[in-house]
Length: 359
Image (cartoon, rainbow, N blue to C red; front, side):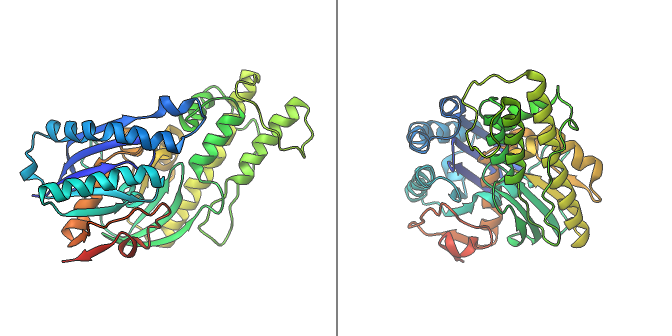
């Protein structure tokens, strides 16, 4: 049995969790900063770092207490080393290094994207932790949209990704255009429930011959519809000011049409890749995986079984970091105490850049 303490501070959630054998949750503590950042329409990096400093010790303490384990029962400390906001990452990494040194525990640096992947290995209702490789993974979040073929634990082949906006970033920007507030994903989904997904024929960037995605043109198409309603010249880049009032019916139809376009592309390209590479299963993860329309579309259209984490494991959490840390720990990887953060850490370069040694 392996007991891992996970720590996650890559963006605006301060999280800690204790997980057994990479799948059984003993505790899961998350301190969210959403309300603090809502007034800015997005994450304010300096504020995020300060809030992590204030919240991390109570969060880690609560995670260990809720798990009902002694510090001596922990096998390792796993922590997100990147990608993410550098200031936020540093808070978590420095705390993890201090804990590891204090308790004489191994330190395991984890790629945040790998953490999202392993959210599909957690034992939850309706989820099958055991996977038969190869597995096709769609990581879809505010900062990333990646299509990855996973051939084994720790073996990743990046097939494609966004060439401009990530899907979650597009949700946030369109929500801002429609004055729906932050975070954009839940706001768009809520507004779309009252809208007609076929009201606007918005573009889909299929990018034939590749496994890449593009959502910038779709975002611009929504902007043009708003400008047309307001009688603006289509060449202007002026956007809606916060709180600008649009007819509720227009907002709902644009939200529904936008959501439909994003889901169409994500599902179609992922399913095509699953067939091309003979994947045994599709794993969807990341914050956008919480979108109800996306989840339903995958379950209806996928040519192979689909695994999607429950909502509380889609957004940033430390359970997934502890789970990923378990598999890295089991493979013999340890991070040195001079572990540094890498704000733009790519998944494929994980072993090389999180300063690890194999024992």
